[in-house]
Image 1 (cartoon, rainbow, N blue to C red):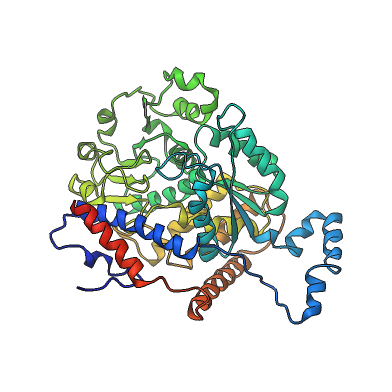
Image 2: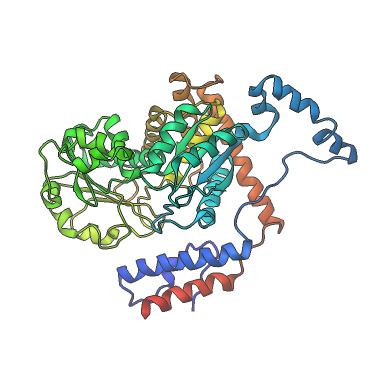
Length: 485
């Protein structure tokens, strides 16, 4: 029997020949989950702290620590902005979460989010040349309920150690208040990647998908399925980028959003959803099948599938329909099923299907761009600039219905994105530091190359061990056996 290589490049060849497309999709999901568990146990996680300065002799300890470092402390005391030059603060991001909505698994308890938060830090470093640290916090108050004010207070207290804060996996409606308060009251960028990051990459994919079907963003009818933090922000960003909200209809778990949704209006915590009620669905469409009639685009970020989005919805759409089914870890409809129903372009949040629309293509470059100019916040304009950078880079290297955006393994997309974000920060007046586009691109490109070369060096010299082949093979065997049962 052919062996699965450690790059996993031949994974599709390893499944039994009689497996259906659905069985292969299920087996892949189970394999990646099993492999992740085994690999994380083998490595005890996936991040570590490594010095970036040398110890050339014993007396260097006196410079890196006491007595010499006292001069660093007093210099920063007299001018806090020098902390960006005299410490790692300027390239350091805290990934903050209370782990109350981890992927599709809901509340995983604070330490339960560590795998995802370390994953964000991993991608920040390898893709964006940015250092990240996972901080999973307990946001429960005395009444046992998750309190957004506790997260707000925590971030305000620790912001002076970081160049930016990446919020992650905070359940709604708390996520709205946490982000909006911290964006205004912190002196560093506070960014909610589930919301703004996903919106950025979704917009990038939509821009190029519309080019391929020869439709303009201001003319298309969009149906949003799901109204959580991600899709609510996606809608806001897409409308800001030129889509007509009057031609949009959004659905949450209780039905369509519109001005008669008094339940949303009454709950002030859901003010972002109420904003969408006021500008979308002016005809008060209630039924999703009615909404899908002649829709050009379906953007679904609701709950894991694969049978959440129905084939008949897609069959009712306009010519050359675009379907984004981006629930994780399993899309609301598998791409092959969406294609069978008539979808022209299908995107998901997963890298093992064509057209991955995942915030991993956005946040490493966006945060790098914000950090390089020491931005005070990440504006919606900066997220839109990143989306256009991704779309432009992808189109330049070639797009088609199975390949609408660049992938994570295309390293040059991230410095382009970072440079465009940096320039937009300067334009928006939120940057502390000025630089040219070329300077930003060159710095980002060099830092990303350094991060990748460091990892490669550690692997080549055995300082990061190769995963045992039997570990990978056992994960595959278990996945195949589970699907067969």
